[in-house]
Length: 317
Image (cartoon, rainbow, N blue to C red; front, side):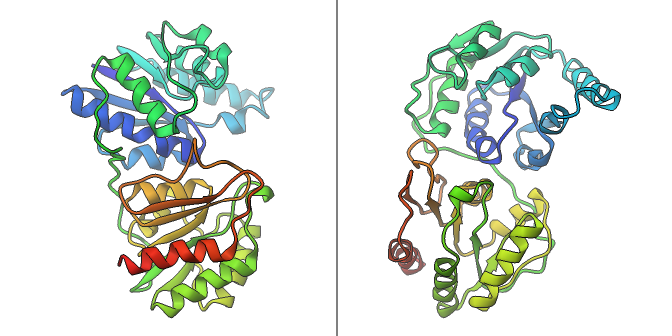
C-alpha cells in the first residue's frame, strides 16, 4: 500500500503526527509512506525511518507571492511530485482547507476528519472518507485514532512511538549539557528572562552547561543574554535536523511551548514545557522520557514551579 501523509505545519504539529505513522507501519507490513510538509520542517519526517520520501512545499511563502510566475512554477513542481507515486490513499492529518486542497492534488482517495472533528469543518467536504475523532483529545491521540480508523487496524494501547532516529550533532556540544529554549513565535508565549537565568544557574550548579537555543537575530540576542547570566553557551544557527542532534543528547530540556521543545520530548529527553498563553491539555509536552507541562492560558508559571519540576528531573538522574 502506498500512503501519503499530509501534515504540513507547524513544527510541533508535525512532531505530534509521527506516532500515527509508527502505528501504521507496525499494523500494515509493507506499507510505503511519503509525507507532504512545509519545507522548514522537512527534516522532522525525514528522521523517521518509515518515511520513504519527504515532499517539501512552501505554501507559507507562496501565499504572499501568488502573482509571481515562479510561485506557480514551484507549486506545479510539487503537484507533479504528488502525482508520481499513484497513492492508494492520502491521509490528511491536518484538518484544514489548505491541507485538504493539497491532498486532493495527489489524485487519490483522500481521508480525513469528519466535519465535527476537523479544525476547519469545511475541510471535510474535500474528503472521500471521513472519521469522527473527539476534539478534546491530545493532538498525538487524535492523529493516532484517525490513522487507525482509515487504515483499518485496532488502535494500539502502547505509548506513542515517535520513531525518530536523530543525527549526530555537528556543533561540538559540551560534555554535560542541558538545553534551554526561551524563544517562541509569539510574544505572549515568552517567559521572563530573569527566570531563565535562574534555571540556567541551577543547571550549572549541578554540573551541566546550559545551552541556549535560538532561531533568528532577535532570538540570538536574548539567548546570549541568558547564557551570559548563567555561564551557558549559545550555538551558531542550526537547521532543524542539526538542532535534533543537539536535543537528542541533552541531559534535560526546559523550553517554551514551541516546536523544538516538543521535538526534544519526542526524542526521549526529560523535558519541561512552559506554557504562558495556551492550555497544555490538547498539545502538552509528550514523549517516552520524563515530561511535564506547567502553566496555561494567562497562567504564567512561577519560577518556583519550574525549578521544582527541574529538581525532580535532576534527582531522577
